[in-house]
Image (cartoon, rainbow, N blue to C red; front, side, top):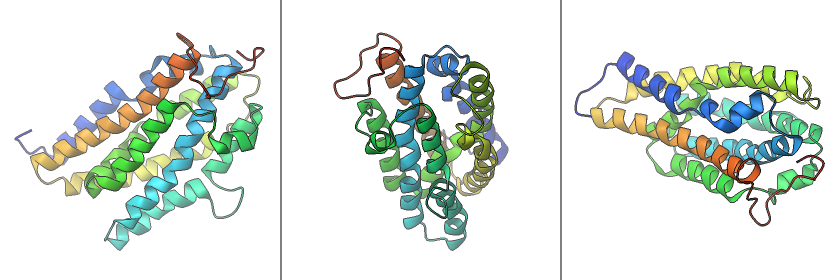
Length: 246
C-alpha cells in the first residue's frame, strides 16, 4: 500500500477481511451449527477451544504490560475481568468449563490440556507471541475479529439449542454474555487503529494483523476437521471420543 486510506476506507477493508476470512465460513462450523456433529466432535471442539479461552487473558495481560498509555490499560483490563472474573467460578473461562462439564468431559482433563491437538496449541501460542512481540498497533488490530463474533455466536447458540440434547441455556452461558463484551471491545479497538494507523505502512500492518488472527482461528478448525471429521486422523495423545459418542 502506497496511498493513505481514510479511516472509513480502512474500516471497510477490515470488514472485508472478516467477510472473506472469518472462521464462520469454515466447514467445521457449518457442521457444528447445523447439528451435524456427533457428540464426540462437539467434545473435541469444546476441549480444544478451551485452550484458546484460557490463553486470551494471558495474551491481554502481555498487551497491557507493554502499554504506556494508562487510558488504554484501563480500557483493556476489562478484558481480563471478562475472562478471569472477579472471583473463583466467575468469568468467561469458568462459563466455558460449564460447557465442557455438560458435554461429560472431566474438568481436570480439560484444564490439563493433555488431550489438545498440536495444531490448536501451535495456533494459539502463535497468537500470544504475536501480541507480545509485534507493535502495539498490530497487537490491538489482531483483536478485531471481535467485530464479527456477535453474528457467529448468534448462529452457534440457535443451532446448538435446536440440534443438540446436551445444549441448554446453562451449558451455553458463555455465549449469552459474550456479544455485548465483544461489541464493546471491538468498538474500542477499531477506534484505536483508525486513529493510530497514520501511514500506509501502519495501515497495511493493521490489515495483515487481522488476516493473521483470522488464520489462527481458521487453522484451529482445520486441525479439528482433519482429526475428527475427515480423514479422522487423531494424533497420538490427543482426545479420542468414546465409541458411543463418535
